[in-house]
Amino acid sequence: MATDIAENAKAGALATVPEEKREAYELLMKSVRGEVELLELYDSEEVQRALALGLLGSETLEEVFETKELGPWSELLGIPVEVQDVHFNASKTEKGPGFYAVVRLMELESGEVSTRHIGGYRPASQLLWAWGHDRLPLRCKVIEVGTARQGQSAPLGLELV
Image (cartoon, rainbow, N blue to C red):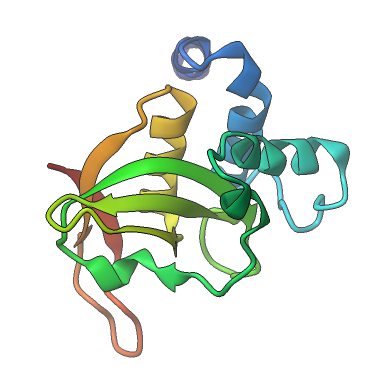
């Protein structure tokens, strides 16, 4: 009974994802759930297609070919931004959802636009949901959602503004 309810909820949530994003969304959700390892399947057509889908949403040639070192979004902790675009890359980090988000942001106060990265279960899942449900642009800020443990940063999440 509980399995049926969970499956129906999963199917209902997936039904609200546009058809062209469904395969990528489901693959990334499987990574969040620990059902697949993106790096182990990295050379597969399914993973490459899912990761490329975000790039295809880029608006400029520079975004598509950007290879510079990206700064972490956490450097803008507490600063309200508009998430204009996001795509996902497989992550080499042992812990986490198996991918991280590359995000084009505009700081709401200054209007400055930058491309940053963020990982972790909560923010990556929040961005995956927003992307998968066509909820971009999204106005939010990065916040600490817990206390830092010794030798680690505090866990991060996104808050709507």
